[in-house]
Length: 164
Image (cartoon, rainbow, N blue to C red; front, side, top):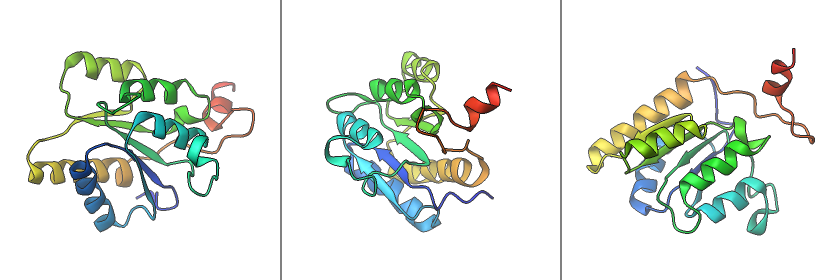
């Protein structure tokens, strides 16, 4: 099992109920020491870029994974995903879309933009909790993410690997 506890989790979610369910499962599993939340796309991009209210890197550390809702106020999740996956440093962070939309265009569009996973939120609270547990089990216990170490000019371990 890979330990992700040193890397924080960023949840980009405007629903208090959905965030609370996810946070309960994460806290129970003790996989992450820190869970950060942004409730809209603009705030999330500031967090990830360490700009705006997040210029102090101790308040906005690079997350080990991002859980992203699509239907956000302001800049929506689709745009946030595109911004993340176009950024030389941020693009290696696994992004799992966790949304109510089961629209095939959303699913396909998110994968085309580089989403690492797409999960449709169940409406029932018990099913929501079970779904969150499945996400935790796969992404935080079974999965091995790429190194998040990047140098100042935007290269990271996957860039160096591709040049060999």
